Length: 457
Image (cartoon, rainbow, N blue to C red):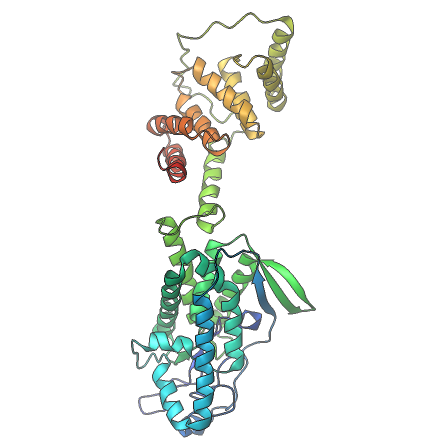
């Protein structure tokens, strides 16, 4: 999540430019930058005389003050974390080895360090992987590891151990590419990889909360929605990249990591390589699309499907003769008609629901029947709405609105009444006969969900 530009772009004869820190996990969703010295890590050493002779500071330049420190999530784990813990230990082990070499063999350490970072001016294949395990100082390391500790376990839980390891490393490669394409300075740090992990977390668990230690005006621990916290980090990198702030931090590497993580997670969900959950970002998007589709179908309120003026309704020749009704039932039926005529569809729907309780096969005139069925659906009375739609189909099988009514009844059976077989039959028929492409798309989407849930529709 951080990455500065460290120093001027050198010419071919000048010393190697100082690395920028791609740290993604650090306090305030940022981290400290590395030293502008070619390989100084915490101000306790310098890498080469050539770098320091250019006036490079031997101490790291902090990119910002700590504001937000994630502590954990409310998403439970299904199994123990293995790969994420190993990655944290590997980063710590490399940092300790770097400290040891700095103290015992500084010249050899400097040469080794520069052979492992990612230098856009001298790209190597191994550099795209090894730079992910180098850090410019203790704060840089600990900031990244906090984020990896918080967000990594849940992503590993969903991707599987081998899949998560591949994703993590390739996320670092993607972040490194984004940096190398536009910035000439070398880069070190795990934050590009961790940005990929947090991007995937955003897609997989957008409804979770992050327990966060906040340092801003007040100090305390708060539960912050994951999209807010991660969205803030992305917005911050976009802002600082656009306005040139946060020198010493590789913002493009972070943004490349986020883009990689979000794109890969969405692709895996869309292709069903990764099993979907009800509340991942892909499924939420599909649900919102469905709701918008239905709202557009029903945008005229209780009259969503007025008959086309050039296609008058055809009354079925097989309409059944209704049973003789008692005086109270006739009065209630008259009340439904009167309320409908006055435009009070909600009261008409309630009265018709009472009528159905006493006479489950009693249908109103065609227009009233369709309007009260739609109103019952809007009111969330799914059982009475399904009965009303069924009676409409029973009495008007050749009506021009029949395909749409079958679509609505299929939706009710599939989403609310747990009758997948009846739903599938209605939705297949609706898919073939509805006139609008949007309606056909809705039927196909519902059928696909039925197939996912039961193996076949």
